[in-house]
Length: 335
Ligand SMILES: NC(=O)c1ccc[n+]([C@@H]2O[C@H](COP(=O)([O-])OP(=O)(O)OC[C@H]3O[C@@H](n4cnc5c(N)ncnc54)[C@H](OP(=O)(O)O)[C@@H]3O)[C@@H](O)[C@H]2O)c1
Image (tube, rainbow, N blue to C red):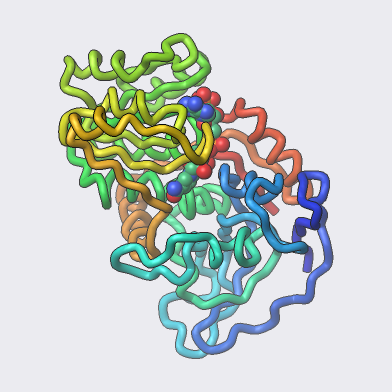
């Protein structure tokens, strides 16, 4: 079978399709899956470019979706022919967080899903949302579940809440769709006015160009009549956190998710304290949360925004497209 493999020294021109042994038949508790789609995340880009070091010969991509070929002894949750999608943390099944690193994350510490077939424990997958193709389903593993957990599981979002989203990448556009589904009022920022128009078409109530308005924290607070927003999904990190603190309401919630502007920096601690805001780091979510998310998607009928799809053989080009940052929502890879 074919697999996309990343060779050391790492770089996009070190990605190539290779022949790998077929994974065979599933053992007890395992399923064999024919994979057909994935989607790109900033994390995958970090692995592929060497920003996040990985082993020589690693198969990249954390997101994977496909169809069950066969099930091993004792597997009752899935049947051959079922559509399944991978879990970002294959060992975190339920309950509070138990993982704080990427040692067991597919496409980073272990092989990922840029390959034709896998045999893995059934507990590393959930069913796909009804009607989703493989690329659409794959977008829930990382970006979708992160947005769901930040807003719904940990944020306890309710109708009428105000939400601030930064930029129009995969996590933020998933969050926009979830927040509108839940009856929230949403502000979103972007460096591109054209992308802001697309966000409006998806239901964004307020849009702001962060290049044209670098002091956007105050502007967002003013938009709420000076109250501040209930939730911020902070994908920027050190370069945006001070503005997010300015935008959040007293007692609000900031989900610290991303590192788009770097991995360390100053925090205006007194301003955060004065806001009495909850600043919470989080990484994706558990398998149980993914199952709940799939149920919500089945009930809602919303579909992810996939900007562009690339064949697996063009994975390096797909990453180059992500680096250009002209995309809106997710970038798909299919085979
Ligand atoms: N903790 C977690 O569980 C988790 C899960 C998924 C992702 N993440 C992190 O979240 C971040 C976003 O990931 P992603 O996969 O959604 O990335 P992505 O799809 O590559 O998103 C890139 C977009 O981010 C926006 N952006 C870049 N710099 C910005 C800034 N200074 N202010 C506001 N927006 C900015 C740009 O939007 P415009 O073009 O509209 O300006 C850009 O197109 C990354 O740091 C990623 O590592 C964390």
